[in-house]
Length: 407
Image 1: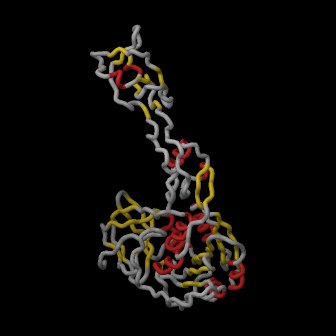
Image 2: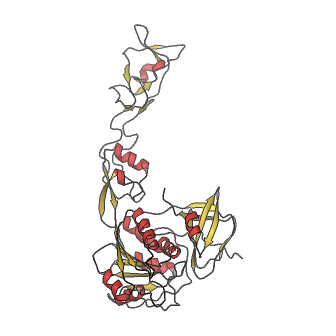
């Protein structure tokens, strides 16, 4: 049975987070080098609290520039404003006769107006001659006799693109915080830019080696990270706390992500390694799937430990890692798609549950909630986080879901 109405969307790193009040947040000593949270296996930290800790004090990384050919889909960073307008001068947008609109007043097929000055032919893209403010199509000017005649009038600017009409001087070269689209790159090229400013976090991805040597999840997460524009180095640590601890300190970076070894079994040592290093904030997030994820910090350096199963890793990636990446790359927000649910979604109170959805026509089809198969992962178009204080959503209720695929 569906309970009271719930806020249907969350924000992942700048997105609105629905209230998640059911888990316990344990605050311990804040001193550097001390583990700030020591939860037991049965104590779960709310997603909201975990995100607050990870994002506290986190700022975007330094700017870098990339060629336009490599920029599509990256998040634009701040650039200097345009010094000159686009176009710099009035230009023709059609092939025809460049004229002064005042000289055409009253012209029509029944009352041609003689032109005192010979018209000037202009191709689309040409700068207009001095004194001209419009362009007439070729058949609207008769040039057969000794004096050219216009058989149509025009308003100022007709057939032209005026100076600054595309982009005014002083406008930004790119729109900071937003993904660069093909049209953004078109505008940058038109303004004469060969490179654009972006941010590329240096991410160390540590594979806590699976017992069976499986690399599926770490390769999956590496591809997701690289799609954001992050510079990703993949390393491997043995499945023991000392090896993981030694790997944490290997070299500087902006973010550490580990994959595997986050459970509560005998061979799961990632949380123990974070505790040994004095970095653990929380082990066990009120998130399903993804309950065994852990978070930490080495000074100001965020650490996110993802479970080794693909569905749990993806859920923790979307709910925990994506907001951190958005902050590091300077993304201003994410927009989802609001559609009604084709059928109801039921959710257990007490956990933030991740649902995968497929779009069919103008509705979301729920594929799975909390327990996600590989088939769900490949079929889904979007994901939705259902807050821990919510029992789900009724059929027909509009919900905002966020895309899993990047065009």
